Structure formats: structure tokens, C-alpha cells
Image 1 (cartoon, rainbow, N blue to C red):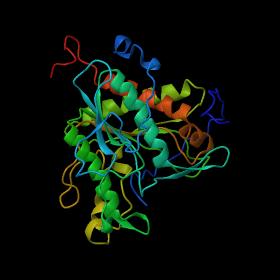
Image 2 (cartoon, rainbow, N blue to C red; image 1 turned 45 degrees about the vertical axis):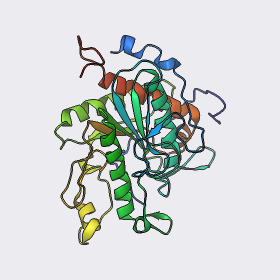
Image 3 (cartoon, one colour; image 1 turned 90 degrees about the vertical axis):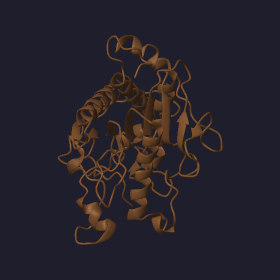
Image 4 (spheres, rainbow, N blue to C red; image 1 turned 180 degrees about the horizontal axis):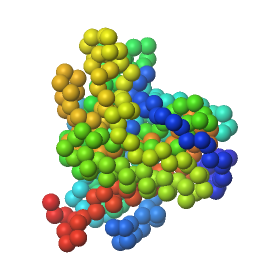
Length: 329
């Protein structure tokens, strides 16, 4: 069934929860009044040729065209900035998935509309939102050493994720959310997972954000009758960012010893100098290699559902403490 033109309430057999996750983020991650009107916000797609209608590139020289773009609130102003990262992009398609009708999908194509849907809701709720990309591009301006055979080299993959951290830091964001999808053999692998890093000074805030993302996105999806398994909130230390070679020198050896997700992980001398500086988490709400979940991930209805869950979690996370005005520091 094509969810782009209808709004079904499908049922499904609950698939067996996977025993382990092989997460590869880059290879070739007040209630009440605050949410008033949340479900009525209309996701807004970017349709201009540059991919950033109404947005302002933070640094057009440092990032690829259509990447690292800031969007002002569309209603009110909470004086808070959120950074949203649509995983992969450009020469990096991410994981390849499949839908119920046998169509092949690419992770990079499906994370972008989720990011944009969440952005539209957050802007309508008074947030300034900076996104890693607004179109099918990398975030970094990749050079010859970064691409080989049409796909990113290990250096290129590293630099592209590091550019997302640089964008979030330049934006002065108070929260970072990485939007990715998972992949693995189906039907064993299905479900939603959120990763956080426990090695940062703000580890407790990372965990709090991850818990909200997992809770709200899973609830939003399963309110549709999708019965998505809950794979929980997990530390990123056993997920890893790269497939490196511990016996190799240079970046391959460094990558093998970096046991974190680069998007939300700490610095490592000689490998990663400028990590993100705000609480963050990476959510993988669905397995695109599972035909049912791949179908949900690839349709505008499914993407909007996930985007609403992400926006709700961010608003909960950044809700002002009692007695604190939203505009106060």
C-alpha cells in the first residue's frame, strides 16, 4: 500500500527482537501547553533549487551547498536553537533497504524528510533550527582524497560527520539529534533504538534526551498500529562508528580504536579534535532492511509520524524549568 497517497492503519506480525546491533553511522545515529497545536503543525518541505528556502547557510565556504542551514522560528521565539542531522547524503547513501513492494530505498533519502518534518514543527513552536543538510548532499566539501570509486573513503566519511559536529557547534545549539535508520538481516532485525554517549561531561543530559526520543518516537509510531519492537536506549560504546583496521596505521587504525559514534562522541587525539559541545543522541527508529519498516520509513506519512515524535521529545527536553521564562539563559 502506498502511504504517500493514503493514511492506512496497518497491522503486522511483531518480529523477533534482534540480539545485537551493528550500527554503522558512516561506512561505505511540559507536556500540556508546550505541545498545544503540535499535531496540527504542517510539515514544510524545501522546494527551491538550492534546498534551503527561508534558511540561511551558516558558512557557505565551509560547508557544501545546501548544508548547515539555519531556519528562524515561524511563530514566537524561544531563543533556543536545535540541531537536526539527516544521516548520510550525497555520495554516501547509507544503508540500502527494501519496501513491501520490493522497491530499493536508500537511508539518506529517507532521513532527510524526517529531519525537515521535525524542523517545521519545531520552528512553529518558536525554535531556531539548524539542519545538517536540506538536500541530497554531503555536509562537508569533500575533496579528491575523500571519494574513491564514487563512494566516500574512510577519511571522507570521517570528515563528513565531523562537519556535522562543526555545524552544530557553530549554531550554538542546545540539543543535537541525529536521524538515521538501521539495517540488518530481516526478519531477525527490526525495531527502534536510540544511542547516547556516556563519556561526555553532559552524559546525564545525553541519556535524558535519548530516553525522550526513544519514548516519544516509539509511541508515535505504535499509535499508528505498527507494533515496532522497542530495542531500547543504548550506550554508543558498543555500537562504534567505523569499520577500521587495528593493525593499520593512520586513520584506519585510529578508527578501529574509536569506540563511540563520531556525531555524539568525545574527542580523540590525532583522530577527532572538535566534538559536539551540546547534549545529543542518535535515533534509528526503524530498520529499512525490514520490508514493513522500510515501507514506513519511505513514505511521507511514516516520515511525518517520526518527525512529530522527534519534535515532541526535543520540546520536552528543552522545556523551561518551573519559574523560568523560555527566553532566559
